[in-house]
Amino acid sequence: MLVHGALGSRSYWHENISALQEVCRPVVVELWGHGLSPSPTDLRRYEPAGYIAEFDHLRTDLEAEQIWLIGQSMGAALVMHYAVSKPHHVLGLVITNSASGFAEPEEWRERNRTVVRQIADQVDAEGVDCLRDSWVNPGRSRRIGDDTLELLSKEFSEHSPQGITASFRTTNYSLPLGDLLADISAPVLFTHGAEEQNFQKHLPRVRLIPQVEIVDLPASHAVNAHDPEGWNRTAVDFIKRHTDNGV
Image (tube, rainbow, N blue to C red; front, side):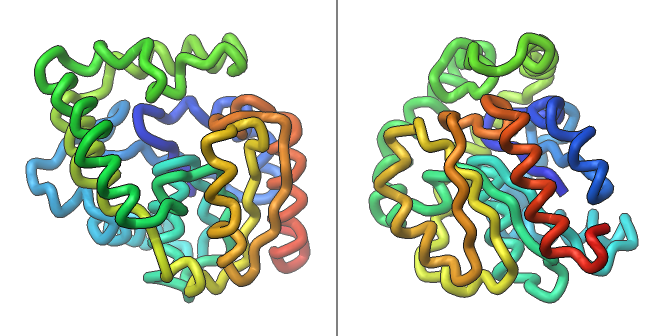
């Protein structure tokens, strides 16, 4: 189950799906209000607990007793919450830089009261397209392949203002795991975008995960899209090593 971050969409994984098909059946999830997903009016569904319930419904619908979880940024934080809540259903995780998941909780809440609130207010006033060229949009990075950028640009127009503001105000606010990082019992591959300077202060908290393997890749925040070849090789190898018979 692949879960993108804020303002991402299904094609964020465009250059990863084929490689992952060697070792699993990739299922791409779009967050509430992103791409083709709806925007529920009940804000509780945007909280980590709401996503845990939704991910578990998907797992049941797929008739999968156990799943691999792959997450980027906000998506990485959400799949870690699922792994803490439903450890018996998790084979392992592959995650990327996620300030929202690894930040000190109070520091992150203050950031949401200031910077993130301003972003949400701007979307309320001007619509989602005001963020198309913003630093918060992962689809603006010229380090991402042209084909993926074109797809992400088209899918950006599908985002819902209501879903995006709820994601910033509700989901983002609640994401830091704090002491729960030590409760992740599954094996975890942390594909570290070593060139994202703002994330480096969070690395000590990544190491709180008991079974974490950290691999540095020549990428910034959009790790799997900046270095798809390196990320694919690393993720596929990790899944093979932690799955019975390599399948």
